[in-house]
Image 1 (tube, helix red, strand yellow):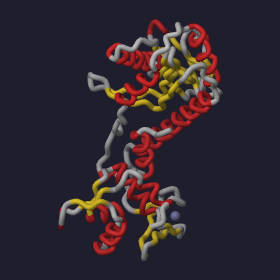
Image 2 (cartoon, rainbow, N blue to C red):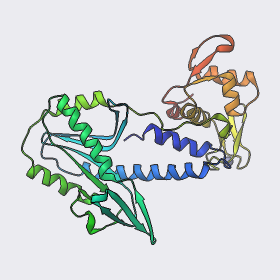
Image 3 (cartoon, rainbow, N blue to C red):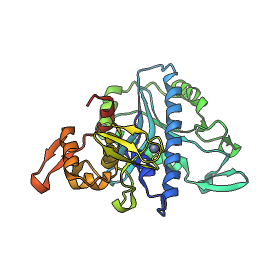
Image 4 (cartoon, rainbow, N blue to C red):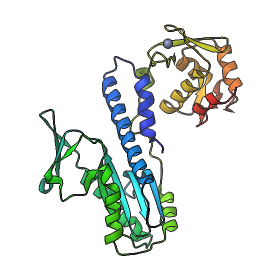
Length: 316
Ligand SMILES: [Zn+2]
């Protein structure tokens, strides 16, 4: 299961944002929300992996795409069987959840505080309408359902939610059983639907960007939770504070650069981001990495490969 590009972006940004930045704490909070959401999707995945499907099936997790109007769709999971399709929206909300259907108002009461949330039914209904329209265009007849799944066991669902497709994650097998029992047996061509959805699938870019001057520069020490800077000496980075040593942190820092700024890096950009001053040392590091090299002379830059993080496991 893959984290979205936005999630990866916020994950790195949370480590790199200057501590006194106006958005620093909002970014940390968003990161924790994204992590919690991802944990919820993992739980759904476990539950679905443990279920015995009665027909062939295919599941897309974190299905992302754009519609014809130029708006994006991000669906936590899409289950395709030969009888029906289900879109799952995973929520990790705590407290007591309530719904006022006529007003489309979704709220919770937690620690005696009332808080409104974006209505998950409207959110997933929008995905349903979109998928139905796609299927019509592809001339495929199959019903599309949706469910809002609560991944937090402590959450309490109020009676006002009773008539709506919202339940704890443990209710997923039962929900699918009922669909198998009550849906007309369409026997749609799964491989065709999966192929069409794969064509539609498109990873969405991060939903934000940031200017360089709001980022912490330098090679940051993982041991110190990215709070302290490491110095370079003969191929090894050493933390100024805890004295931890690392060679691999080079790849992690390049990964941070790639996620936050882009895949192209020049010697000058390398020096700036890594907080290193020696041009020669930096060109040695860059040329030893063996990245694809473009341009010439002062316009030379290198392409940081997408899998740069996994380079730490390689012998270099
Ligand atoms: Zn350290």
